[in-house]
Each structure stands twice: as C-alpha cells, then as structure tokens.
Length: 510
Image (cartoon, rainbow, N blue to C red):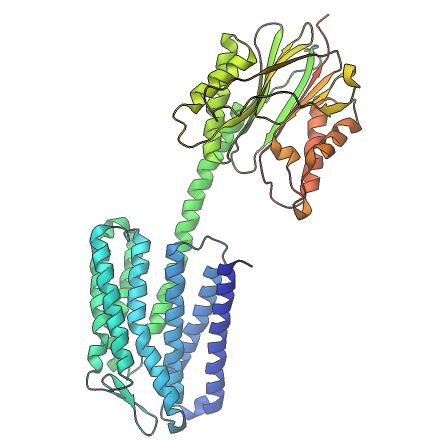
C-alpha cells in the first residue's frame, strides 16, 4: 500500500473513532437529558460529520493523483469535521461538572479550528484559481500565515487567562469579555479571500463564484444568525454542505475536461489509424509476396508504426518502427518519421541512406530527447534479394530454407536508434529469399509483454508460436501471435504498443 493511501486509511480510522467517541458520550448522557436546542444542534453536527466521512472517502480513494488542490480540499474536510465533532461534544457534555476539563478541551479545540479553516480555505482558493505563484499573492499568503499563527497562539493562551470563554464550576460554557474579538482573524481572512475572488472573478464560472462566496460568508453570517437561532452554531454544518457542492463541482469540471481530452484523443486515434496501411495485397492478384501487419496501441494513440510501398515495379520497401515514448508526443513523431522515410526512400537510395537522412532530420534540435528504432528492408521481387538496415530495433525472426526452414532470431549488425545521436553510420545487411521464405518483424511490445509476476512473453515463446504451424498465411500468423500474447498477459492492461508484420516471399511473377 502506498504511503498516501496508508495515511488516508489512518485519517479515516481517526474520523470513525471520533464518531464512536461522540456516540458513546451521547449514550452516556442521553438525548433525553438535553434541551431541544441542544438536540437540534447535535443532530445537525452528527449529520454533517457523516457527510464529512463520505466526502473524505469519495475524494481520498477516487484513484486520482493527490495534487495541491485535492490536498487542501481534504485538509478542509478534516478541519471542518474536527470542528463539528468538538462542537457536538461540547453541547452534549455542557453543564456536567464531572467532565469540566473535557469541556474545556473540546471548546479550546473548537476555537483553534476557526482560524485554521480560514487559512486552509484561503490556500484552497489559491489552488482552485491557480494563482498561488503570483508575486502579489505571495505577500498576502505570508500575512495570512502569520495571522493564523498569532490567532492560534491567543486561543491557546485562553487556557491560562480566559478572555474568549471559560467553563464555570458547574461545567457550563460561558463567554469571556473579549469573545467577539476571537473572530477577528476569521473576518479579516474572509475579507481577503472575498477580495481575491472578486479580483480574479473572470477565471471562474458564475456557479463557482456563488459556492466560493457562500463558504467565505459563512463566518460573517454566523455572527448574525447565531443570536437569532438562540445560540445555535450551524456555520460548520453549512461549510460541510458547501464542501459537498465543491466536490460535485470538481467532479463536474473533471468529467468535462476528461470528455474534451477523450474527444481529442479519439480524433487523434482515427487520424493515426488512417495513416497506417489497411489494404494488404490481394493474394489472388499479387503473386510475388504475402504481407500483413497490425498495430495495437497501449493508449488511445501509440508510437509504433509500420509501412510498405513499391519503390518501382520490382522492389518492395517494408518497415516496422517504434518511437521511444507513448501517447500524443510519440504519435506526432511517428507521423513525421513515417512521412520522411517514405519520401526519402521514393527519391532513391539504399536503406542505410534513408535512415541516415531521417536520423539527421529528427536528431537536429531534438529537445524532447525522443528517438525511433526502425527496421527497413527492400525486397527485389524478381530475385528475392533483400537489403535491410536496422536502426536500434529488435532483431527480426527469419525463416529461410537455406538455414533450416524454421524461424530463428538473426542477430545481425545494426546501427543506433534513429534520431538518438545525429550523424551516425547505419550498416546494412543482405540476404536472399527463396519462394516460401518468411520474415517476421515486431516491436518490443510483443516480446516484452508481461504476464503474471512480471514474466515477459519473450522471444522463445514468440518462436514457438511462429514455428507451430509453418503453413499459415501472413494474416493468420499475425493474429495468432497477437492472440497468444494477449492470452499470456491476461486481464492486465497492455504495457506497450504491440506491432508486427509478416512477409512471405512467393517468387517472381510468371
């Protein structure tokens, strides 16, 4: 279990423990011993505490990244929850001399919560509006922090010299002579937050403004409606309700942003799919070769690609490549690399010259540090002669009659990845194919596919699949390899893009 998740479980356990303590106290003193106002206040606090537990669980365990906004939101929930607990506890035990010290502790903690709520909400607003790094805000943040520390210190000094409140000999709560001044920091902080929201209001929607304003004004309205409600303190319950609304707003915005991203990725996926050849040779018409390829991205868009095209009437160019990353960035480099390879190859030149050209173009001003591994081959359809160049790619599986007629991994010389170190030399290899000979190209998403316990699919399993049924056509062979690799991985998410190409040389045209 991750450290953050352990901490969340521990905090949740503490929240449930506080709930249990409150229920024990209620059971001990019974609601029948409380007046009507106390019952109403405690009921509001208990319901709001339950809401706080639900909010904490929903937010802390939703699987999203624990960023700054989420951290301050969770802290806000925890502090308001603590205030609700101490408020409810002080109402339950008020007037009982035997728990006078507990009443002192509960009310002291309740007083400490007030400035903390304002300061944490201030930080939450900064994160919400993404203005924490601005210069004019940093000075205000320092001022808010100093004020919060001083306010907390004065509340702690109340234990030595009662100025805000005290508990009399009968165990009843009594206000001190400077009770109204205890809200000074909260009011000042609320004014500052109110001003910031107004200053940056153009960044917010109207419903966001209303929710943030309502939370900010809770401290002000408490002074007004508390006397009207015979001393009830519903501002904490109001705050927890607003936190619920904030949570709903956050999820609404998150779902909107996610929908927009998904829509863009869907378009990118369709565009990428359209760039890869989908029409393969019709075996009833093309007699010289049988070719099929597939690419299955690990994400919505991938970095692998394949291509094949005729250089002239007798020479077929074919390649499989893998960009060093995944996602949108890799897809962009994939599109650029694929276009450059085809354009340069059709202008003429050997495979090594094509890779050297692309290497120079990609490697120049490559601030992202991305590169492409690539295997490019030219097949002479008249003679079966192959000239190929390997730019840091996985070794192909070759099935040649002159070498036993089974698929083997040919570890031939190769150059570095394309775009990794500009100006490198890419050595070529040459070999001859007889009718029936085969080449199987793939990316590391195939042989490095991970199953249970992190075990890789590996080249040995790949060779077993390739050699199991030597008479399969290219389409059926690729499907069999893909299905076997997927079965090996199981229900785990695909780790990397999975691309493969099968080429069978059938001989010259008669």
